Amino acid sequence: MSLLIIQIPCFNEEETLPVTVRDLPRSIPGVDRIEYLIIDDGSRDRTVEVARELGVHHLVQFPANRGLAAAFRAGIDACLRLGADYIVNTDGDNQYSGHDIPRLVEPVVSGRADVAIGDRKTSQIQHFSWLKKRLQTLGSWVVRQFSGTTVMDTTSGFRCWSREAAQRLNLVNPFTYTLESIIQTGHDKLTIESVPISTNSKLRESRLFKSIRSYVTRSAGVILRSYLLYRPFAVFMTLGAGVFGIGVVLGMRYLYFRSIGFGSGHIQSVILAGALMVMGVQLGMMAMVADLVSANRKLSEEMLQRLRRIEAATDERDNDLPTIALNPRALPAPSE
Image (cartoon, rainbow, N blue to C red; front, side, top):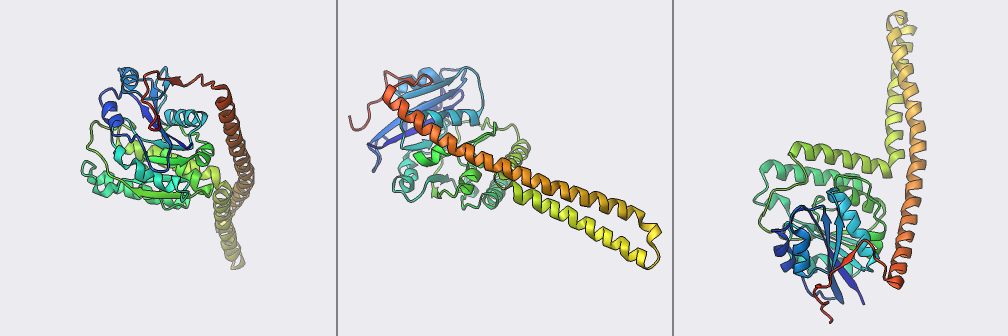
């Protein structure tokens, strides 16, 4: 029997969580059971109590706020340990419509894609400012170039993973998971499909970033760091070749002037050429070392995937889930 778990990271979502859970589907074609999991990221309001009253099936709690990326990773691990065949992530602020979940999971359930990502069509969202729309469009284009994918809305948190795709996730960024996971999935050669979705009216302001400038700066860092993790050889070798090439050109320039009798006035070019050529060689050596680190990361991801498979099998036999609270008031599965 196939199991779909819908996970919802929450931080002080006492008011918006009831609306979000109310719209979640109780049945989906091709899925035998649907369960809900709440990741409480150190909420200071009644989020946990409300979740239990709503009948969610599982609850993961942090004693203090750790951020969206940590909550997301904890949710993925919990879903895998619970035996989920498909995992959907949505937000607790009701930004995404629960009625779109059947459409979102269809490419994954049918086997056409490993990951499905909701496309909000950000240029048409009314409560987005002109600047935010342009930045979203530009940012998604940049991520597509770095990841080699065709994802239209790279910051969308409305996503569905197959079990195999979720087991391969190895995210390290503490800020957000959306960009890093796409770059990783793209370089792992998994299939991603964008699914057009609708969005609900805004119920509260975003808590992920304090300003657009802060978000752009941190997102740029996430993109660059993630790309370097998977293509370090190409990046450092290209930089090294460029720096070394400039040094060679300056050296040839000095030799030219020396050949016509003006070499004494261009000693600075010799010094700079030598420094640049040394830097180019050092960058080339860094490329080789970084490539070895990248190879080790790939091995780590394979080991993590195998470990998650073993943990899931052990949990299914022992029914031992110490980090996941089972809700005695949970809604019954549709098949019951």
